[in-house]
Length: 349
Image 1 (tube, rainbow, N blue to C red):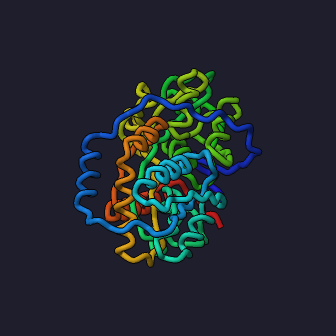
Image 2 (cartoon, rainbow, N blue to C red):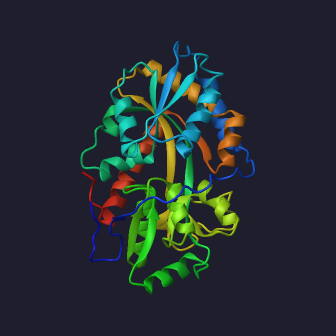
Image 3 (cartoon, rainbow, N blue to C red):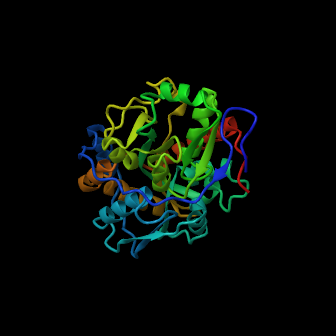
């Protein structure tokens, strides 16, 4: 895998991962928007009473414990206890950028008892970033419900002499090359860095780490000169003055970093992106079983405790059911295919 080395943008380098950074501390509690609450209530009331799963459900995810997807999975599992008395077991199966977990669920029995907590990388980006994918997101999964999303922030070392994204671009253009940390090749952070560099006309080298926390440690140490990290992870370091946040990738400002402009406000609307999470089942799962799963998950996502916990840690909670989630996956797959093509990224074998 390589980048176009003759034009501004990214080439490839990997270095050993540094020490893990501290986990983010909770921020202030925020309420779910009233429109979202009303929509969830209406969906729940419109759904006929359906029998809950008669055995424990296994919720598989392709990321380690303590990560953002793991937090979403465990909060959902806890809230589902009220809907599914047999319970939900979270099963962490990290490896191959989430492909191992996705492949396992794609091949599981379509009985509603094995589900995937999937995210944008596995379900929308992977078809464009991997030449040989062991599953087909469009063919092998039935979308059940979108759960939440989280935005990113572009952060730089506190000592870097810049105060805005425009300042950073000018600073980077004056140098032969800058190093930008990513949490893996072919991830949103990687393509965000590529788009930033290519669109602004400076050359950047992506330094790939195993996680966002490890990448952030490299920025804190001055080992690299910037990164796109999730708002939840970088906010404590920004608030402590250890990092500077120059822009956030959401369409509105992040509650954890209200003073930081959006990428659109900073003049780069093309950098707007987010990581989203949702539940999918094996494609052959019967429609009636899908309806049971959808109803239970949407009701659980209306739990005030779940909403508060996710929002405290930087997530935007805006659940939607099968139809809306399927539409999101289709639209995001097409969007990321275009982004990948523009960056000149070559699919990973």
